Amino acid sequence: MYKTKKEIEEWIKKFNPEQVERMRADNYFDSIDEKDLHGSERFRGGGNWSVELVAPQALLDLLPEWESKNWWEVDVVMDDNGEGIFESEQEALDEYGVKNIDEVNAHFARRFYDVSLDEEEWWISLEKEIEGKTGLPFEQFRVNYG
Image 1 (spheres, rainbow, N blue to C red):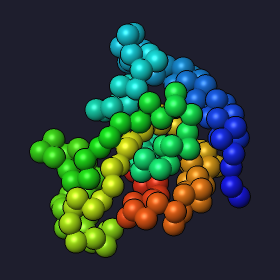
Image 2 (cartoon, helix red, strand yellow; image 1 turned 90 degrees about the vertical axis):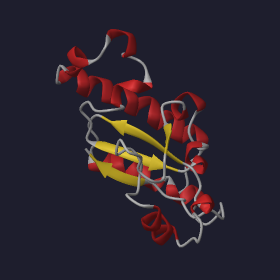
Image 3 (cartoon, rainbow, N blue to C red; image 1 turned 180 degrees about the horizontal axis):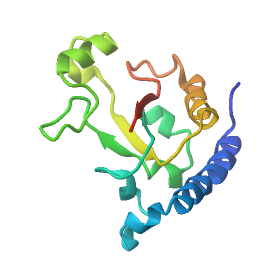
Image 4 (tube, rainbow, N blue to C red; image 1 turned 180 degrees about the vertical axis):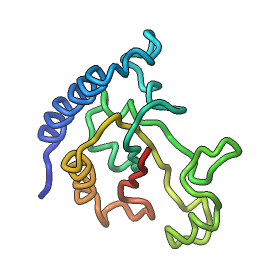
């Protein structure tokens, strides 16, 4: 089922406060720097998170601008700090069926504190909105568990 921009925005407006409430219930805010309570840094570089979603720009374009700003670009191939999606360039080439790493479109990530299966499925359902329409190798969410 396809979703309108309004439906997407309304769902996210409900989802984000639920994330905050779950964090509050688990006293997670005690471990967050006060200046970053509302910033996107709180799930980067560690912290408690259950799911990291990785999406292409085409999926971010479906989100309200204020939500898409919570996502950051990640390297396709892991760097020396272990940050990235694939352990090797060859793994990425094999996954996307391309001959050159430059053919792989950008990946953006966001981490979530606690996501139910229904919530995860909702995010993944957005794939139907762009499936087969971009002409790019990466058109779906990648789900990584923390």
